[in-house]
Each structure stands twice: as C-alpha cells, then as structure tokens.
Length: 291
Image 1 (cartoon, rainbow, N blue to C red):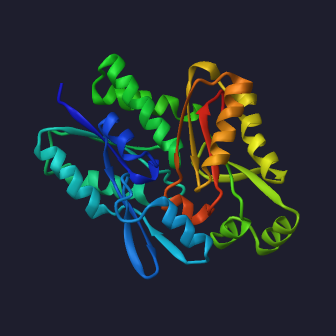
Image 2 (image 1 turned 180 degrees about the vertical axis):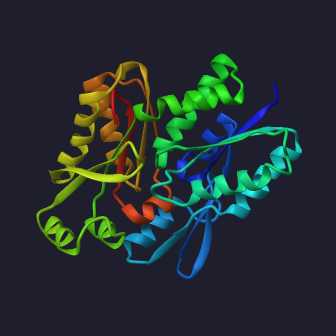
C-alpha cells in the first residue's frame, strides 16, 4: 500500500499547532484589505485575526480569493514526486471554487502520474466544521490504518453527521455578501435580531431561525446541539469565533453544564469566512443525527 498525505485548505480554520498535530498539508486562501493581499495561513504569519477583525470593525473593505488550480498543482506535485498519494478534503464547493480547483489539478495530473491516486472530496463544510472533519479523518486513520480509498469512503460516510451552526452579530456583513436583503439587515439591526444559520446537507449557508439579542442567540446554538447531538459527553466539539473569545467560552461552559461535553476546541474564524460574517461571529460544530 502506497503512503498518502491528507491535504486541505486554510478555510478549515485549524491553528498551526492543530495542523502540526494532525500532520496535514494546508493550502492557503487569500484576502485583500487596504489594497494589499495576504495569505490566510494557519500560523497567521501575515496578519493576526485580532488585527483583521479590528480592520473589518472599523469599516475597511475586504475581498477574498479561493485557492487556485496552480496552487493545488504545485502542492500535489510535491507529494506525488515523493511517491505519495493524496487525499484532499476541501472547503464546501457551494461556498468557494477551491474544491473545483483541486478537482481540475487532480485531473490534469493523472496522465503524468498514472500509478498515483489523488482523491478529492468536497467537505460540504466551512470553518472548524471542515476542521472537525479533518480531525475525525486523522483519528480514523490512526485507529485502523486504512488505505486511501477506505479512508475516503469513511469521510464520505460521515459528512451528513457534521453539524454546523452559526450566528453573526452584525447583519450588514451578510447583506454585503448577498445573504440577506438591505431591508432585512436594517430592521434586524434595529430590533437586535440575530439570525441562526447552519450549513445544510449540500454545503450551503442557510438561515434557519432568529433570536432576539446576543445572549439568546448564543444559547440558541447550545439548544441546537441539545436537539440532535450524538452522545455529547463523549464527542469532540469545535467552536470558532470572530474575535469574541468571552462568548466562545460562555458557549463552551453551557455545553459542559447542560450536555456534559468534556472536549472542546476553540479557535478564531479565519479571515476568509470572517470577511463575510464579520466580528462577533460564533460557530458551533458537533456530531448529530442530522445536519
């Protein structure tokens, strides 16, 4: 059995320590702010999350760019030249062209490396939901030492147990990204309405319900987990936040109190996701009976 690497992109929002511990190869997406383009890397070498969210809160305009075919071609060649196959798990294809770029690069390389396997999977996930999927994938690899096709089948089999629930603090960021209308943003802001959203079974970000006020919206995330979580006390839960660590810790404490969750990993929402959701974003990722 040929050895293989697990490749992904930086929209998984795993930090550098997590990436190193999981042994992942991570391709960066990029963002442009103040007229300068930065790579979104797990170590945040070019701009810290705190600085990014401060700029967004101050009204700076930002745009993002997917990982492109050339990036995947270069990274995949390095692995293939080292004699390794590739399992590539990408940011939701419904939210980015990153997955399509990986597929194109993999197809282009087939004729040059006929004996190699490149398996590309749409994670149908975003932020640390994608990160959680990668975490589960690596744990399964370490547990059973499967070949690449067996592990790929495992990944596909667990996609629909990945639950992603989000709230945002400022509706104007969703308005700018075309997720809600200007009128909805205006009246929602006036009434302190916070949309509760999830990533559906096709990897799309969908508004599901509304909460009145910040605290109620945070508790709504916990309520969602309480409704569908599988064995919450014995699963690893992931949280991401848009520079609002206190709120993330509050959600974590409620999960421990109400659901006896023991293992919770917290990190920032990255700038690519954060550009569209804004400061104050809070996201909860867990295993459930359905998305």
